[in-house]
Amino acid sequence: MNNTTYSVKKSEIERKWYIIDAEGKSLGRVAAEAAKLLRGKHKPTFTPNMDNGDHVIIINCAKAVLTGKKLNQKVYTHFTGYIGNMRKTLAKDMMEQKPEKAMMIAVKGMLPHNSLGRQMLTKLRVYAGQEHENAAQKPELWKF
Image 1 (cartoon, helix red, strand yellow):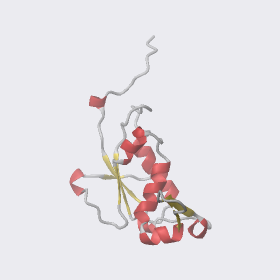
Image 2 (spheres, one colour):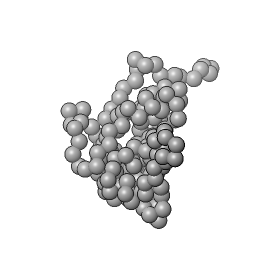
Image 3 (cartoon, rainbow, N blue to C red):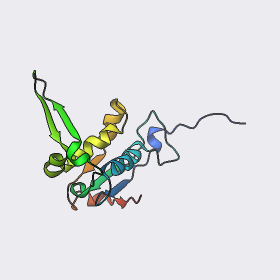
Image 4 (cartoon, one colour):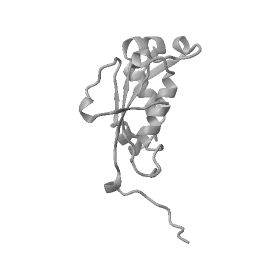
């Protein structure tokens, strides 16, 4: 009986392109699905120590929904590096001004917090509206 664990090689990795439409869906659920695709957990060849995930395009981020009181209570913080310069932004303002950034922060938090996670994040494209620049890659619509 063969008791060896299969590990995918870099040359065997096949990457696809997927589109996730965030319109009317919860921001966190869309981010979790995107993180799963970026990590490659949907593939039978998933290897935790390698980046074998796919490219993900998220469209309609401006129409994503925050449930409960998150719109008025959730706070995004950013430290500039100077003393006393911690910037705070409400989720309501972030969704109005930069909905792509809110989605990017949510996906980034669901990926590994190391160099592998940063590498996975480079395969994510986020757009506030319906249009995207990646039609040449022939992306498929991901339903969940």
